[in-house]
Length: 182
Image (cartoon, rainbow, N blue to C red):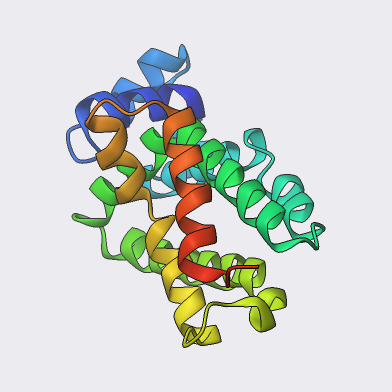
């Protein structure tokens, strides 16, 4: 049911997709969808949760956080972000679409984005003494968040970049923007 909802939301949009369409695509009865999820809103959350599990987000982030050397950490962070967006660009687009019409989804996603900011700032916090001159911890976190934003990935891929080109650019840009020269 989650895969069917993900496919329908991605192709038709959140508002235009109905629970009967999801049920038909999943090969189940409409009451089964309501019994399992209760609403389209809950399906959006289930889609996100499934994506994060499939992308092994927690495990991959832990690997980034385990790297002590600053340049290697930025390279690993870039690869981590590329994997997130490669595996979940459609999920992010679904959430953005659903936020426009559902205040509860919008509130949920704002909470997720706040949590994302905290988790991603943890990547740069241990490097504070290694920042370029004039870059504060707060600025470093903001720069990291801005450069790794989904919209940047989406726009570059939309302009014909490959995920590898994005990853290489992001790693280089993070190092150059945040880290002092040796």
